[in-house]
Image 1: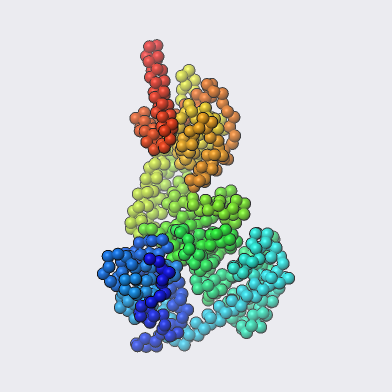
Image 2 (image 1 turned 90 degrees about the horizontal axis):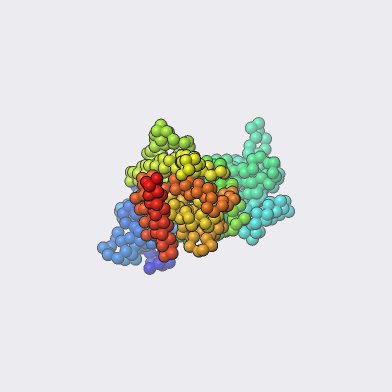
Length: 633
């Protein structure tokens, strides 16, 4: 049963709700609601959230399905579509929007239902006064002025004066036939040309200034254009109407590089997302968990051109609570994609604080942190849409990024610092308003902290100086080894580069516990792939790790410096093996045997299973023989 039949044979209640006159006048008085208010209200509400309070809904493809609240049915035939913002009950034949659903299920009038939903959405119901009607009419004039400016900028882009802007767009790989899709334009490099054009279209000076298109001088005199000599990006509201602009400077030394409209009666930058309406519509045709959020206009356009049409961007500021709420109205698990530099990581960390309070079961955010200082536009142009898809597929859950932020803030090598880490983690979890999610976060973060401290203690034991059989001190960490955060990486990379080391150290690799999970991922890939006589190389393993979404592990492997091979059978080989064995769990052979047994049980290749067992038996025999010789002496 498909929702394509929505719109056919809708109920009388729905038809009545849809065909109210422009202004609604209930029996009790003369309250009047402009059409735009109802449209804005429905744009702010996700039908599945409202209807889901009365109907137990289950996700099915792009829709939600449940048992009809209007009939006593046993097989679900009640559907909700958030993108189309409608419901349909096939057992009763009823259907409509969220307002008609509330009217029917709660026996409310249209005005009562609108008032109830407006209160939930944080909107103030317009009052029946001449002033409210004047305010509505004024708003419509400002929208008309913004739309006229957008059309003017579009025409200027294709005129001779827009040549530099055209060259910029073509240099960024955006073809002329697609400029209209984003309503891109150019603001003439003139102090009054846009202002005079809008005046000729019948807009007053106060309307042009109030719409944010011109600026009045402090000392008086004629207003001047706010945007001059810039590539223009129209910003639309949830209904698709132009309410503001972003302008990019074309000269390298121009300040600022990006200039947005100031706040106006139409536009508040903390409450709007670039291309939100178009992204919601595109999201209706995807199977992703939510919208993609990136940092700039061109990043959004690059993602759209690469097939990720459900991309949006904040407007020059960090994500706000209002913007995160907009994201959740479109989908339960948006992906925040930040540039791979210090500023991008900082933006990701700030977003955590704003998202935590609103987390609910099934509703969260994910983070895609690009590497090498790249942004989405760079990655797509250099490596193609496939690389962007892989990066998005490897997005990290919020709890992982929160954990990394607090873990890496300072060393946790003393009880006091460990207590500080736990305090920060619990403080972050305490801001979550949903009780069930809050408890789940507290359990997860405490478990991560316990595991991290245990691995740290285990690794510290493994890095102590160990006496060799000859009585001389052996340093387990070889020259040129990795930093503490990736302790053990150099040992694993040596095994990747040298098939002989992978053979003699196979069991020690299998039971090793590394403090960095990405080092463990490289080790797991080596064990899983190393079944051929010739072994594997870095490139093969890196491709395998990327296919699994373990992008950081692949990067660690490929970027680790080349290591000279060590002679077989010599002292360096023994040092490597001793160093590797220090990463075995400290509580003895029984635990090591259990881990090896788990690896045996999960290995798919029969030859690999045989080698795990034979290596362990050979090592046990060597240890027993050494013990017997020691006793005899």
